[in-house]
Amino acid sequence: MNGIDGKTALVTGAGSGIGRASAERFAADGANVVVADIAAEAGRETVDLIEDAGGDATFVEVDVADFESVERMVDIAVDTYGSLDFAHNNAGILTGFAGVTDIEEAQWDKLLDINLKGVWACLKAELPVMEAQGSGAIVNTASESGLVGIGGLASYSASKHGVVGLTKTVALEYATRGIRINAIAPGPTNTNIQSGMSEGSDPSEMEFDTSAMIDVPMDRIADPEEMAGAVAFLCSDDASCITGHTLPVDGGQAAD
Ligand SMILES: NC(=O)c1ccc[n+]([C@@H]2O[C@H](COP(=O)([O-])OP(=O)(O)OC[C@H]3O[C@@H](n4cnc5c(N)ncnc54)[C@H](O)[C@@H]3O)[C@@H](O)[C@H]2O)c1
Image 1 (cartoon, rainbow, N blue to C red):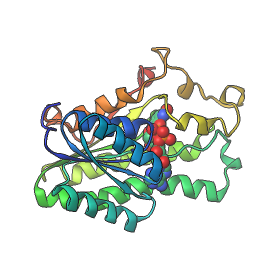
Image 2 (cartoon, rainbow, N blue to C red; image 1 turned 60 degrees about the vertical axis):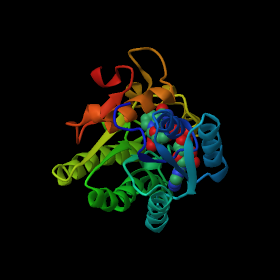
Image 3 (cartoon, rainbow, N blue to C red; image 1 turned 60 degrees about the horizontal axis):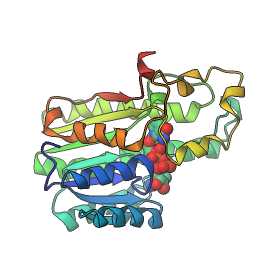
């Protein structure tokens, strides 16, 4: 992909699913990759996969909900590779389907801390480095649930609408400073997070409308590599005039 070779990319939640595919894609396009995840064993596996394929990667353990941990992650990235050109702020969790009055306060706080505060923490740590360089591109992982309401996913949908709003706002703040900030909005994608959904009620048996989550016009679940392709495009020079945009990668869900 245009403009990625020889640069440094940081991916959070890179131990699994979309983050792992994104890290592997950055490496295949020639970037040095910082693989960041709270799950150390999974993150190291991603590094092994990249190295086995001839790429260069370093694992950093991080909890994106903790700003000090995120600052340390960015410091290690810069100390290791000398720059930070791309960031994919992707770590996130999904708890099961539940009506809004059934969500426990602690569950709400945990999900918002990881999915929304975590993206803010990453931006806060990454942007000063990119600003000092005068260049950079960031992609946040939102969701189809950040574009439409989905019954049974109040905390998740609120967090992902927050990511979309954060992306637009920060893109405006940095529009003249050489840094582009975009988001992807994945539809249902074949990763471990899908198993989190099964911890709650069966969405097809819920009394509210969950069709926006379940129905995909292309009639299939996406592969993580299809998300990675969109991230690579948004970071590449081919997207040089795109900022503040949330790109649905959802088999047509957003068009429905
Ligand atoms: N899979 C889907 O259908 C889908 C759809 C829309 C959006 N998304 C979003 O995609 C992103 C990636 O999810 P995925 O589907 O690849 O799931 P996944 O569970 O396979 O991967 C998520 C990764 O994030 C890591 N993580 C969790 N909490 C963390 C924390 N506090 N700090 C650092 N890392 C942490 C996990 O260890 C895991 O490796 C998430 O933001 C998710 O909300 C996924």
